[in-house]
Length: 116
Image (cartoon, rainbow, N blue to C red):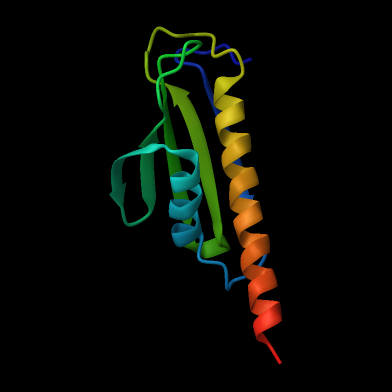
């Protein structure tokens, strides 16, 4: 549970190999999660989660860093006055990273099976 104005959680993910297309896999991961696209530019994508009983909704920002093949993900409460998130921002980040890693593993397995 985070306490901040607004409450947030941030983490960084480094791709396991240069062949991984983080932008494409991020878009696929977010489709699985059902998040709503707010805006996208060359090096970042912003999504909104769906409203739930515990929280109004969160804004998830994913920034891509080409130099080290990584991304930074931040989940932040939309309401500026919401100082407690009851762990929801951490869960958003963790579940996104779990889905992303599963997609990377599936892609690696498919590539390994395609090789003679």
